[in-house]
Amino acid sequence: MKTIAHTAHRGFIITALWVSTWLAALLLSLPVSAKPSPTSGERAVPSHPQAQTALCEGEFLPISPALTDLGPNEYIRISGGPAGVVSGPTGFTGGLYPGSVNERPTEHTAAGLWMADQITPLDATGTPDPNGMIGMLGIGMSNTASEFQDFWRLAEADPAVNPRLRIVNAAQAGKVASYWADPLDPAWDFLDDMMAHRGVTDPQVQVVFIKLTNFYQDDFPAAQLKLQADLETILKLLQDKFPNLRLAYFSSRTRSYAYWQGGGPEPWAFESGFAVKWLIEKQISGDASLNFDPRRGQVHIPYLSWGPYLWADGQNARSDGLVWLQSDMKYDCIHPSFAGRAKVANMLLAFFKSDVTTTSWFLAPPYTMYMQNLYHIYAGGTGANPVRLFGSQTPKR
Image (cartoon, rainbow, N blue to C red):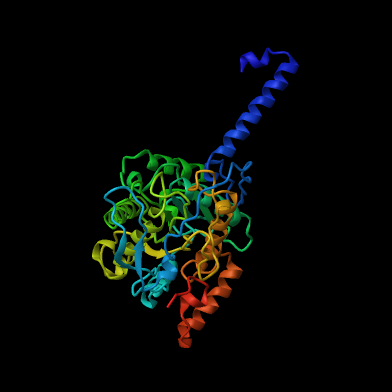
């Protein structure tokens, strides 16, 4: 500072402009949640991404119907992998939930509603406070970081979203599930830093979104079972750290146009969805090690549910019309382009604004009251399926 103070006026201006530009570039390079947090009650909209890099030019090869379209049919693994890698029939079927369907079981949805009803703004110590916060974390790797950043931007700008919701993007490049499963990994230090930037304390965190995979998943299903085990460990670490954590939502990987090689190629990207499917099914089956309900004993992890299922077989449209094209990916054919990020961000926002287990805490009061009236209609015995009623995944039967 002493050097600048004794510099000529013109030199001072040039230096100040250079520093300002450098700081702006630094802030834009950080995850959204790393930027200075707004004051209490103030909503800050993160800046739009910078210029797009080159797009994917990879070859399209069909992999499989999406889990949501595969249903009770058997997954057939493509050939062409490294020597010794097994392909062909796997013995595993699709669907997101037990029975190869895409709808949450009614009892599990009812349990999710009960958990969601306990979510309320909390002060820094975890005491209910109408002026407090509902902390929501994003956990994942590089794809998650960019997609969740754009979701954060959309949510902050949406007047229908609860102003007491405080989103924290803790997803990090290269930090796949095996890293997060280590409580001493720097990923957890980064999470603490992001929470501090957003002014969120551990007791205020009540919801987490998770999108994770692992590297090197040639061996199906052993690699997916390992991913499932890592996710279980991560959930237990999260529950231990955040005493008021209630709900955890998962999404799948998006499609890749790289095959068998690289950080997240096919068929690994598709197959990582099985790890999430099996994990959620394990909780639904009543496994005591995954208990979320204090009425049933010690709580080990939060309530689990699918968020939006993101994977589509490239140019082959899903039954709901979703495709994942080369233009949805950067030059490496794995990471999302701006178009791909926007697709995912909008799917996330649509899910959290409509699912029966999210609207009571994600939406602002007038919207929440409207949705709660619809809940009462369902609870009154209309026979409507709650997942269908509020726009979640439609089953492929």
